[in-house]
Length: 464
Image (cartoon, rainbow, N blue to C red; front, top):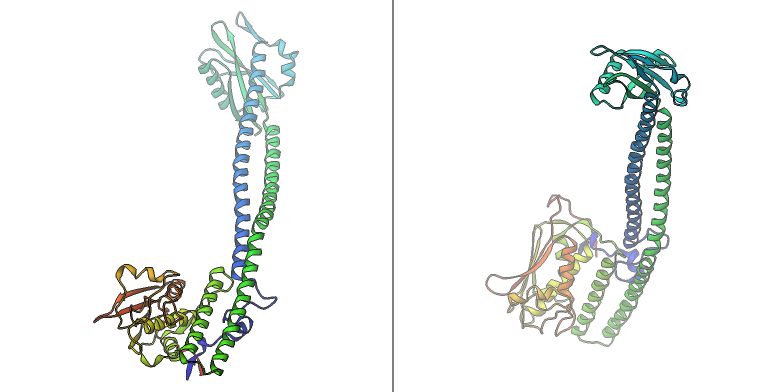
């Protein structure tokens, strides 16, 4: 008999646990479940560090903004207070401006740039006093703007303007009153570079500190997530060990039981029961290992029609089963798909009418149907029979899907159709029961077709 190579047992894995999905060899890559946990740990570390970084960036931005405004306000207060103090040190006497106190005032000595502006009503201001030099003052146009600001506000004004030599300074101009009008203004300038340097130092320290804190947060998050996942990793290891040991311990006595039954000349029914139980154990363990992430699901391009034909031919009672196939290529795990097809056909044989009743299997693009000629299943129960633990009555009383099990001559075990539904969902497909034309029940297994459609070459074959 010819069978696709993809349907062969992967011997290296069968030698370990007998399930076809054995334990990985020593030194091999970690199991998918462990790999997912490690990816989760790295993601948690990244999220922890990112959250910490976002919070620190917000706090640092607020701190920088507050420091900028605070330094600006402090500089304005300093230069404004100096200008107001010096404006009170000079005065008018009968139209004469007295500047003598500026030579002795401590505020004047501490000023970086100091000047006195005077203007007659309606005229541009002139510079009466400039320290250290006239070049340290703003250009005449800027002086006119400062003077107009003092006249409009009639109080101290603070502006930023470059000096004639290009130095950017912060200026404060305080009015000097001559009777009921402003006759002059004291102009004081200071360089904000020192405060800006201190601000830049603060920004650098904040950046360095935030970086260090983010690194510490990432390290702490990685450590904490590792400690939190340690019980899960330990549990996964124990579960994988249990599944491997259970597979070996269950398959070994079943094989011995079959040998004893053959030697003692037991009935064909007893041998079929042993075979069904062996396949059921294999399917359940495969499902447990896949759901636990201990074994990845293999998805390879395969000829679904060849898989169905081979599976039906391997059944002990395949004489009453007819197969009509079209060439169909799907992506899937050959062992799991074969288990699903086997469960559907055996359920149809057991629950589709009297012994020997015909069963029709059809393979079309993306669809496998198994039809029986039994009494069918009530519509209200067609979803329920796919649940684990739901069993069907004895042979001949219901349709293809009623018996959820695959072992036993009477009621099922409640696992067969549950495995079919699980395999379908694992392959992004569906499984359901529908009425068959002319009576009976049809079980449908729908699978997404491979993008290559039917154009892909057949899988390699070897003699079985």
